[in-house]
Length: 316
Image (cartoon, rainbow, N blue to C red):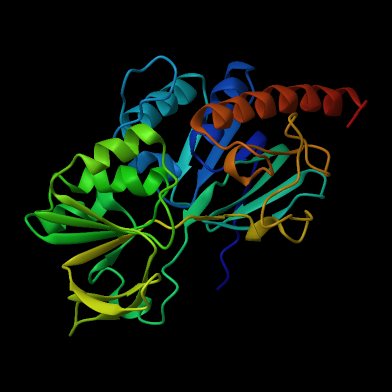
């Protein structure tokens, strides 16, 4: 017997609960709109795993989890509802009203704010599936505690990777940073890394293979300069080599560019009433502060759009 899903109307549906999505929820809620935030996984997205944010105005240092929990509380205090783990299955952005269907409900809405963020890129080796969660990990905050007094490697060279290294040093007895080129993190983070006696940095180095019976026990490394391969014993590998935008769901309605959604600084997409905010939006700078700015802009302009819809005078 097929389950008939309940249809619910919301003024604004926000897809994604990172900084952009929660900021949008805060502002939309304060406009006395009915606001729903849908999140496929845990609230907060990538930033929830950050252990020490030092470049967000108003905080000398704050964890991603603490920052996200504060913004979520603000949004909910303003009336927004945050629905965690209700998977968005499909959307009809060009419909009137717009449709967002989850595993449990069908939501009809006047405006949609897409703030679905990004996921970490998987390790591009065929053995990745064999060792996933058996030595190969993507969330240091979730799994770092499994490697108390163990040897850990981190693959990556950007700020997120270096943040992961600094976090994991509280557990590891030895930690390797492996990157195929040069480090791209900011100078302060790199200097802190270089001064840590637990850390050994291997640059211009690629991971060619993973070894182990039942779980990861070693990496096969290639020194690109010399062409020499070596086997490095490790207990765990944390992969941080970039991200992939979560936009596949919207490809049927929006013309994506390199996986991201074309939208200007006003966050308007090509479809009236649909906004893109945060890392999914095509733009040059992607920071916590710009995500919050996008969320603010998208919510305020969504409010104006809804007023136009109710007044029968839509401008886009």
